Image 1: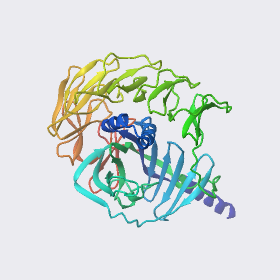
Image 2: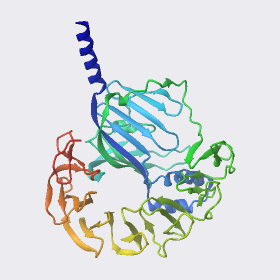
Image 3: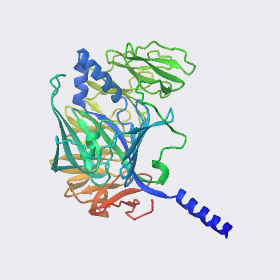
Image 4: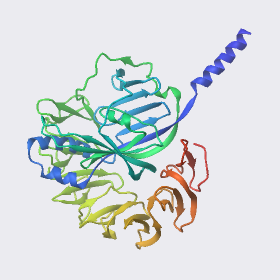
Length: 465
């Protein structure tokens, strides 16, 4: 009998330890619009310079996944990938929240206040948009001017979806009054927004503090050394407020002369100096290019660098040699073989050689892949083939690239979404409140008045996760 009892107990224990739950996973990134970049270029005062140093740090992270969130019905986990790495674990039922220092393997209990008072949040039920395939509503946080610090009033736009439970972290405590997950938080040209949303299955202990973590006496905010890859480490000088480089053996390679240094890719990194000009440097801190650029970003699809100088943008390789003769007002990161560009406030498409394959004559191009692009004019969305600039689909208020071959996410009224192919054949009926782009052949869809998402394949068939 004892043996039988032990076997039953063991079976129950194993079943409990392997228990899983389905959660949303959101990858967030940073976006900076062109007007803000222009303001940065024209800023001269010391105060603006400090602000620009921070914005320059963020600019190097634009388009990258800088924060991950896993969201269950009562638990969520947030992992930061910028500056200092940390994890936050929150249980809304138990009303507990902990911050984990992954390097020191320590945790700190955070205050939990489920009734904050942010009376300066206004909800706009008229405006809606789609972000990462989810319908979003708008809330506006009004931040009053501070006469002591001579600051102007600020409005923070919060686009949120009620289809995903609320998450809160850091200085974003006002999100406790938002009835759903914030997918975009933006003000004055700088926004923090969802890049991709998917569903995953995780073990129930995924939201628990690891057993090997100990409670920290106090939290430290000192800027620590940062591993930039390629055996190079950035160290911070608190006197000059600048960064220098050293190797893994702590041998100093450069003095603290950089306001920011990005991660190394193929032995090349993007760095900024005190004047907030950018350059490419090698693993010894030597200049590959001069510090003459207003903006540089590595584009993995292009395997090169997009840069801004003298109010125009173009592309160069890792030696600083221009890849193109053409230049534009703005260039997006490449999606497949093509990128969206702007000249004279008109949109077009270029290939990886900088050749204009779709003339810059559209008032807006919202997305593209290696075959199609979406143009929006007069409140109508249209899909075109890039080669030949041939119209494929029209008559919709919303169209988006689905990441599946010849399929589009579409809506005629901005409320009910479906899938159509290039021949305008309906693959998934217009019965869904949201449809995410496909990832590994699957997409998440949701019907109105339902909290459960449904996973489908590229044929519109329901599949398991």
